[in-house]
Image 1 (cartoon, rainbow, N blue to C red):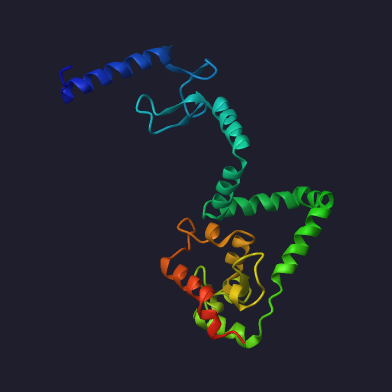
Image 2 (cartoon, rainbow, N blue to C red):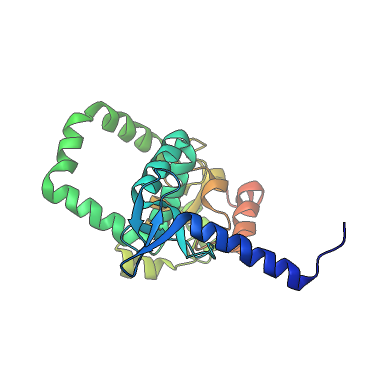
Length: 238
């Protein structure tokens, strides 16, 4: 079979696109309509009925209408709960997601949903507090803690904010952070962390929390944390 020239390939591509366009679009009273390839209903082709899809060179819109796209997305989320939760956590930590999360929490307080949830989930909250308190109690002397902070230059080991900045911006000193949420309570499992990083990590595994997807990640800080946890803490343990 003879090899097609670039011009011939382009011509055939345009012909295919033209056929596809005629199959899925129509013009009536100077208004362009597009068929949803999922429900086969016709809608006026605009942002109200279709999501924008820049990768679609045919018309720049998604082939499904918004209603079908939402149903498909919801089904995928229901079928993949763990991936969905991880994606939500990542979004909620992002500069775009944090304000929305805070605004949603404020709405829940104002309309009473937050307090209703607390009343209906007392056992869950009790168990959550018990585990949190169990893991928050460090058996570290004042000297060990000062040595730990000094090792990290009196900064949050995760993001690098100084303790002075943490007091000014967050209203708290650096926290004694359990790197392994259910690990030891001594110096072998402790690094300094600001309030925001401490809250963001919570019960996550270290590798899940502090990786290239973390906005504050640097290879240098990762190396220093690992070196402290594996060997250098022994130099300061009493």
